[in-house]
Structures are given as C-alpha cells and as structure tokens.
Amino acid sequence: MSNATLIARFSEQTISSDSGNPTVSRTILFTLLGTLFTSITFNWVSQWLERGRWLFNGPQLLAEKYKNGIPFTIKTPERMYTLVSSPEHIKELGIASESKLSLLATAEEVFQPHHTMNGVELNRLGLQHRILRSLTSNFPRMQDTLGSLARESLTNELNKFPSNSCWKSVSIWDLAQNVIATTNTYTFYSEDLSRDSEFIKAAVQYPQDVFIASEVLRCTPSFLAPLVAWIVTGGHKASKHLIDGLIPMVKERIETFSKTSQRPRDYIEHIIHLYPEGIANRVPNMVRQTLALWFAGVHQPAISQTLFHALVDLCKYPEYQKALYEEIQSNINDYGSLQINKLPLLDSFLKESARLTTSETISLRRKAMNDYAFQDGTKVAKDDWVCVPQRALMRDPTIYPNPESFNGYRFLEQQLESSTKRAAKFTDLDPAYPIWGLGKQACPGRFYAAFILKIVLTEIITNYDVRLRNPNERRTFSWRSSMLPWPTSRIEMRMKEEAN
Image (cartoon, rainbow, N blue to C red; front, top):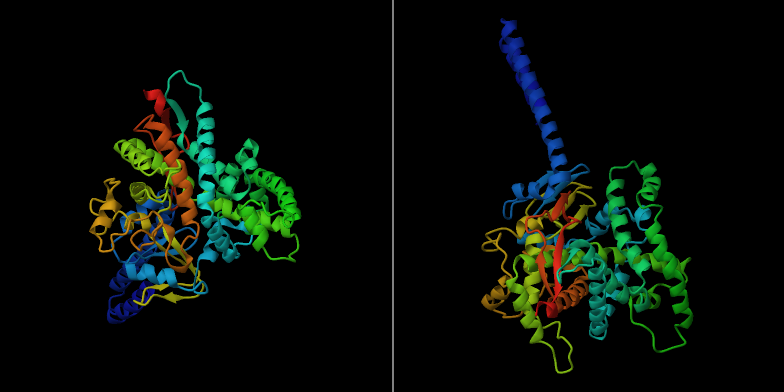
C-alpha cells in the first residue's frame, strides 16, 4: 500500500473520530499531508541526486552500496540497475539465455551502432567468435613480427619527444593506444597498413569517436541522433578514412583468393572466407564488421586501458621490473623466441593490476527483455539492467586478503594454495574475477587481448626502464561506471643499454 493511501485512510479515520473538534482534525490532516509532501520530495530529490552521482562518481556510489552477496539497486538517468555479487547470482547471470537477459540489447543501447558504427550488425557474434578462434590458433606464427612492430612503434613514440637526457617523457595513454593500434592493424589488416601513419591515426581516433558519440547520443532525442553523431565524429572522418582504405584492399584480396596458396592469415582473410555469400554490398559490410571488433580491441579495457594501468603499476612498484625481466629472459628458447605462454608472474601481475584498476567498474551487463526473477527471488523489471559490481567485488576483503594492497604475486600464491596447482592465467573465468564475463557469453577475445598485451609489455620490460614523471599526478577520471585514463598522465622511459 502506498504512503498516500495509508495517509488518506488514516486521515478519514481521524476526522471521523474527532468530528466534534474540527480544528484538531484539520491540524492532523495538514500534518499528514505535509509529511506526505516531504516524503515524496525527499524521494524525488534523492533519486535525482543518485542519478547525478552515477554520471560523475559512479564507482564511488557502487562502492558505498556494495555488500558482499547482497543485491542492491541504483537509479541511473536512463533506468534502474540491479547489482548482484554472490557466486550463485553471477553464475545464473552468465548462463541466462539471450532472450531473457540480453547482452546484445545493452550493446545496442550503449553504442547505438546505426549512428556511431556505420550501421554494423552487432548480431553477427557467432562470426566474430569463429574468426577470433582462428586468429588465436595463429599466434605462434605472428609472435616475432608483432614483437618487431611493437618495438618499432615504441621507438617511434619516444622519438616524438627529443630530449638531451636518456629519459624521455611520453603520454601513457597515447603510447598505449598507438602501440596497440599498430599491433592490432597487423593482425587485422596487413603489415603494410600497420606502418601507414595516417591509417594508424584514424584507427586510434575511430574508437574515441564511437565512445564520445554514443555518450552524447544517450542524452539526445532520437530524431536528432544522425545529425548529432555526424557533428561529434567530425562527419565520421576517421571511419571514412578506414573504410576508404580497406574496401579496395578487400576487393583485391577477393580477386586473388583462388589464385594463390600463400595468403595472409589475418582478420580480413578470415572474414572473406566466412562472411556469407550473396549479400548485397558484401565488401562494405565486411569492412564495417571489422571495425566493430576493432572498436572492442582498441578502445575497450581489454587492451589499451589495461596496458595504461599496467605501465603505471610497473612504475609504482619497480621491483617487478627486475622480477619480470628475469622471468622473460629465463623463458627464451634455443631459437631465440620467447615462450610467451610460460610467464606465470606476468599473468599474475596483469591480473592484479586489472583487479585494482579495472577501467570498467561493472561487468556482465544484461537487459531484462521481460520481467525476470533469479532463483532466490531477486527481481529485475522489464527493460532494466542487471550487472555485477566488479570493482567493489574485487576489493572485497572477504574474497581478497588486503584487497587495497598491490601484490603482483597474489595469483601465484593462490595457485600454490589450490588443489589443482594449475598456473593461474590472466584469461581465466571466475565469478570472483568477472572482468571477462562468465558463461557462454564470456569475452571471446580475451586470449587475443592477453596475447597482444604480453607482446607489448615484454618488449617494454626487456628493452626499457620506466618511471613515473610525477608520482602524485592525476591518472584517471570517472564517467558513469567507467574510470578512464587521464590523457595528460605521463611516464618516463629509458633504453636499458643507456643506463649502463
């Protein structure tokens, strides 16, 4: 029963019982009406304050509301979020069918691909999964070339800032984006394009355009969306540059597809082979599809932002630079190649860095396609979202001892204490470590992301010393549930041989 109904009924009874004293009755009625008005006003103000806090301080709001295993809600400007954190809730969320709790629907709402991503079809998830599996199988063949490209890109970044000192100051975010874009371009498109500076510039700009445009569109009336997206993205300049460069290349690949057995094994080649025949505008559609995965690979926390925070942690805790260097050197085989999958300390270091500094504070976002009830009775209304408060969860002292302290050996120690003794991997799925999701819709690109991260980090650790330029400078800012890199944050790097 609502507050208004209760007050109305109570008022009727009071007036009836005090009919001989109308002054008392009116006083009670006005008091009750004042209480109702105050209650409604307080609730309204509280909801709007919560919505405002969500926009500008979402991570802190989540941390304040989090209690281990207990569901809670947050009112955002668009809808109600239900946050769950018990292993049972998270596992149920991970296996729920797309028709009930939809990942695709949340992606469509957040990124509005029709306006921001050239109308890409996000429902072709199965195709993306198959291509990522094929790319994963080719990692050993790509490793040496990717290492060389990462090394070359790092040199180029440092050469942008001439210095009389052997230490060179660079923007961490620019470095992370450009090096990741270079290595990704090789695996996606070609080695030639990975050395095309204008293509790399557009490839870095495109994810930024999508992210900013999608956020602006969430506050824009739908009829204005095309115009606003065009303005925010500068007329879709970056995506047009990428598409104009890729369409001729794809057409040339298709023409030579049956004429040679020596074909590249990059993303483009896989999508040519797997994309359905007979579809109108097949080549432009294929190219747009590659840009959807490009956005996920370059912008999302999986790679660039994780690299940003890993570099900061290498500087904050310099003892790991030596330990990781020694692990790398001890795993170079007789042929001079690094056994990149045999670096348990690097896996543990990456996991710990992401645990404390994950750029996205919620995970496993799902939209309720109809009213949904978890097995324990927790309810989510139709069109509301249910998520996992992963940042708060991964700082829970009942799950992680001394959760606020950085311990790069944490997951190695857990491995030694476990019954399986299996080496912990950065890509492992775990309800207590949900950055990759869980269940059948867990991130299919996590192996690719981890591989690229390790390629870049091993090059940096092997060849450079790193330190923070200003240990006290600001490094992140929050927007909604995200903690984003502060673009002016810098580190200093020095070639190892220059230190001698």
